[in-house]
Length: 289
Image 1 (cartoon, rainbow, N blue to C red):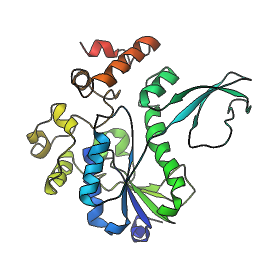
Image 2 (image 1 turned 135 degrees about the vertical axis):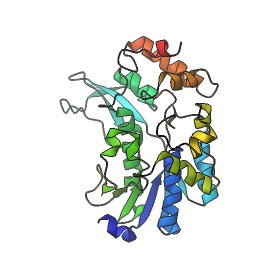
Image 3 (image 1 turned 180 degrees about the vertical axis):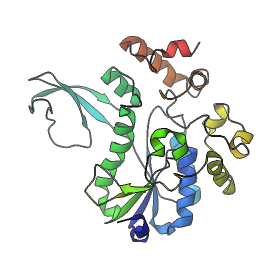
Image 4 (image 1 turned 30 degrees about the vertical axis):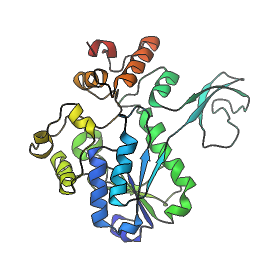
């Protein structure tokens, strides 16, 4: 199945984070494919700005798009044979086995249900080269949901992702259309419908539909002029409150606002305990001064 065969899609799933790009993508998809094929999926991340799930629900309800929400959860084990520590998705019903030695003799240690749980488990922050937060709580979460809902999705589903080439050098290399990895070969494809868009086009698309952006943009210092009138890339992102990619100014916003304080305080406590800094050479506590 190629992009030219999009009309063959049995279901079009828009991955909605609550951020500007995913909302603009949802609007674009609704203009492009039959509305009855479109559903939305939100991966719940506990370190997102409070109210993000409710924001996605409000937008999808207004647009009359069915929304499915899932939160990844993992059980942590230690192998009794080789003492290797590993995580098993709670969606997996089989007996956990150790990938290091193959033993099924293991003791349960703890649940891992959030990004900060995962940072604490791994004793390290994610990085550009090892973005385990995305793989565990975004990609694998969605793939698990897709397998469980294969009947709903049909023979040729498409997932729409709101990644834009101008956001980073990594995303600039992404294709607009490709097969989804981690699932049955040839079953699902990815479509990045706003890959070539500029940031101002994203905000203007939302304004055309009178959709207010998530409150976190304004909270992090973005003005109406920044959104709709200034054709400049960058600025605040809709991501985890304590995302390692954020600038010190954006991290301080999370810490000194009621909405983000609880997440930031836990991040501080975990970083202090494990000794690995959120950015190379820069501790979170130093950036919040």
